[in-house]
Length: 92
Image (cartoon, rainbow, N blue to C red; front, side, top):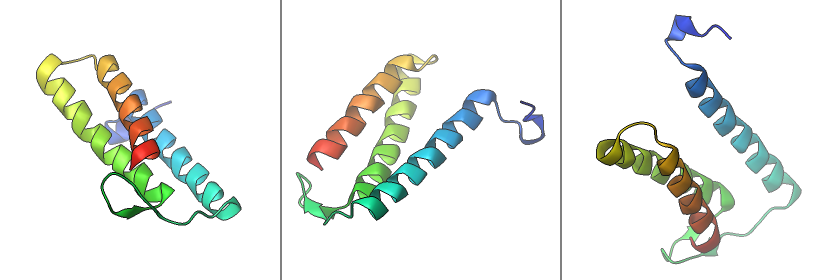
């Protein structure tokens, strides 16, 4: 795959494709099984879409902190991001 015209790497392209797929899955889920907002530990109402957004946002900060503390590669940071996303979907 030649992405040099945007100075993207294959990893960057995969990252954005996976986010796009996640958004499609969340949209289909919302259409098939609408859910009422719920109140979690933050004491605000959140929908699954809100929790997905919070997971992405928090994962970005976790990844930046991992790079600042440990440098590349960030596979350990990705593991932390995965468990963070699970916690957000479970308790937020």
